[in-house]
View 1 (tube, rainbow, N blue to C red):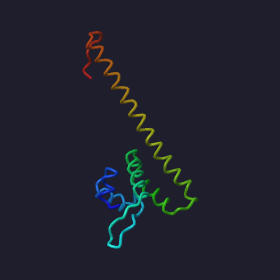
View 2 (cartoon, rainbow, N blue to C red):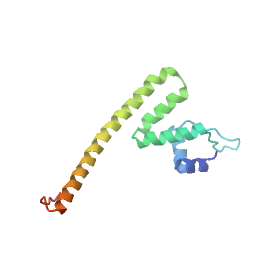
View 3 (cartoon, one colour):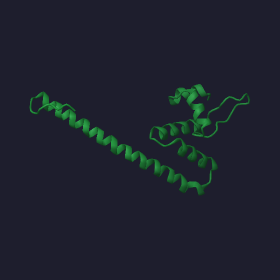
View 4 (spheres, rainbow, N blue to C red):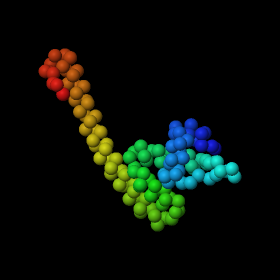
Amino acid sequence: MNIKQVGERVGMSPANIRYYESEGLIPPVKRTDSGLRDFAEIDIEFIKFAQRMRFAGMSIKNLRRYVGLVIEDNDETIPERIKLFEKSRDELKEKLDELQKDYDLMGEKIKYYNSSIRGTEKKLLV
């Protein structure tokens, strides 16, 4: 599959796919005799995975390291892979906690203004 087809399938521009590959966020993609990228299903799955990890906040550095460990294909790297995911998961949990606080604050404001419409509370400036 060519890069344009893959981009349409995963919702990413060909330029972003090339960037992911050049930065080591996905393993190198096989090339045709003429030098064009020829994506296999495993490449597409890795792109989707990398997208999700970046969306979840995994750093480029950690994702690059993870991909390098996967390419090594050595079970001895599994503990380091776990540590990378644990670090990213902990960072994501902190973000989720902050988002939960924001979500709760919005809920409080909605409740406040709904009661304000009914005239049961005084209006605040904030």
